[in-house]
Length: 271
Ligand code: SF4
Image (cartoon, rainbow, N blue to C red; front, top):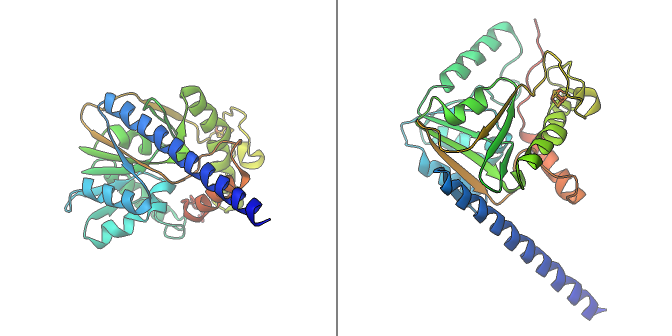
């Protein structure tokens, strides 16, 4: 019995070591691909190392604009930036700060506008292909635009769960998993602004034409934007909403649980 347990334990450790090795290989592949596209790719073993790499990229006196990203929040980098005296323009403060009034919405828009042209832009991505393309779907466009326009430096943080094989897998993942779950969880499960998009109720994409659909702007970054130094920090952790249905239920549940904890909820209108 003892021997059997020992063997089981060893093979578990072996499997874990193999998975880790395979993942690091994939990340390395992405970093080399980014390099070939003149985009700076940076590896971080974990959240702590990732935070440090991001801090190293941001000058102390820079003004940092934020694009809505659960991964960025999950890393806990925003408070560290504020604590060290760096000005952070974050229109997506945690739920409750903007109460859905007209005035509050106007204030948020003002911050969003300022954040779209400042020293540094910090956000996350929906997917990165193994050959280094950043693929994103956005409702408003500020998050994707900030990656390539309006800032001398932009930083995109990526969890290992966002790495996909190719563009086909990226499109499939975004359309069938990320977007519908994002809408359903925020507007139904977590009580955010009600949406007419059918996926709010069904959790599935029907290629809708709803006025408030979130799939309005699809971007693929193929190379370094001419006027922006784009940095991609790949963290060897799961971050934000992104998974494949073939993964273990335990991993998927953990990704969704963490996402729910940090996601920004668009407020319901009070008046
Ligand atoms: S296209 Fe419409 S239904 Fe499909 S995920 Fe986007 S918002 Fe939802």
